[in-house]
Length: 398
Image (cartoon, rainbow, N blue to C red):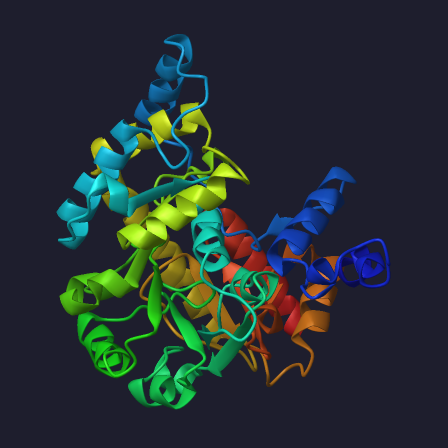
């Protein structure tokens, strides 16, 4: 089903070369297939979408209602209302010890848009972007859409799915424009410690032309003793070369509100604002006011959410490691388990499709993340659903 869904795009001569160079988002395709199966009456447990199963907290929803009722429903500044930029500035200072001005802050319609806008105004033919893999499915195709070349650097379980300074140094060339770091990571949940980031910073200092993009969207979803850190925080001398991206989708269960933000050098933020003026214009006005409430409001609810996620993580990883031919590292962050199934299948895409069709459990194959031999399972689901999904997977493997 998934493989056939977009096959016509590759042969339709009415389309530009730009769109035929990229693939379809595997996570979105599988999630849509799961929705269609459920609508047709199938019993489906979807562990494919990267979306919290909690409701957006009530104070945030109330702020949106108040904004609508007070007439905040018109065009805003292209890259964010002053109140939201101020909330973002306070968030960066409070959580990351980073100081930005309003001219150094961008608000876009989703975190994905922040990343794409930054690439669109800096990357062209002849530019390389280093992407450690496993990586989020959209990074390489975003680079291709901008005319650049994604340089995929495999990072296996032996390094905790993280790029090492040696691997980063080996990938660098005069063509390198960006290095993209996602911590905690989608799809693995891997996260870089402050010391690991400092070691990477030592390599980056030798390449002053290279920009750094830190995708911190899962910042608040870390567990146990792990302490979150970001590059501009631990290497202040790289501040003017770093775009620190975040958003409200994952931490505040606001995926549909579409608010992402980033802090970076003035020249980059100005170029992104110019680009948005000719593409999306401003993010939704009501969503921006909701994001103000999210960032400025009481953050204590996150403690309970983290405890719930951690319990789910522990249970899912334990169940996976008890299955024949399956192994899975315990991730320090995000809400994904990235299971190695290479001992039971040499075709992870076929495995995921068969699992969905025969058992109704939706996962995402690791090949979509440039890491064949794995499947990604989201544990952003109720524990009974996770237990049922693990039962079905276990029986599927027998």
